[in-house]
Length: 409
Ligand SMILES: *Cc1c(COP(=O)(O)O)cnc(C)c1O
View (tube, rainbow, N blue to C red):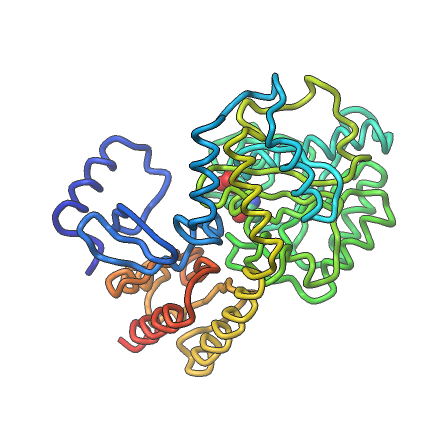
């Protein structure tokens, strides 16, 4: 019913469609402004944002602290390139490392660039420190991963849509089932001393918010530590408050060798990503061996510094825990009624498999949109719920009411 928007929105969608590559299939809403958890479209209709830019908007739209930090920096200094030092860089690196309990930061812009940086770091570390023969490094990854869109990253994707027609693919990756320690151990055995890293999402977001079985992440930590293999945790979507902790790894008491961060690090204002690790590991780099024109720029650092300060208060993690418990309790009731087949997630993050009789994930998303709630489907019958952590309990409850009504239709 809502797949065709009347008036201005429809016109803008048609024009955009005529002049862009169709790499996305957005819901037919055209957003013009937003504040907190609410967005307003070009025709003045309001929608509750229950996706939060895949966690890029953990702090909501236009958070006053983030906007103020960005504005102040905009007026002073926006870009130097890394050819020169700038006065926000030291604080950014120091404070981000401290937030992570680590020592050193290598800044990039997008998530995919940070994952690429982690891959390059692991390989270089393998050759320089571990003594892997040149060109032989292996990185073990999980099936159904999502780590971004570059040629190397899609080379180790198991999603045919993401991967097909982009070959030849980058070699050097081995894919094992997610959550299966025996399979990981077998892969480590198979490649012997050539394995340099295991790269995982501590919770698989794009796959449908898959939480691994208890003990999996500690098991990965143990296996990697005992074999001198780096554990790289891609916390681009799971990190920075979403699950109720600063990092999803914390729920299992695990500290990886490298955190990969992005999305919420830029506060929904600018793209900011980074890998964060030890001095020993990041100490492998020499000038000229890696870089990015925009990585660690003054504007990015200013916004990220405010994000870090906000996370240090613990307020957002606490909201994610409390509102997340409430969300999962309420969604759990829908499992009881049979409308939801499976519910997964942690904190303010849920993957909800809708019983197929109620429609596809896309259909549910469109019906929710008609009621003023924006979610995103993934893999057929799954919808993903991940509102900004600033959402009020009343608004969350209102969204849940809309979902119950859609499922009762
Ligand atoms: C979004 C995402 C990425 C890629 O980030 P981009 O900024 O879109 O390049 C990588 N890993 C995970 C887990 C993500 O969710």
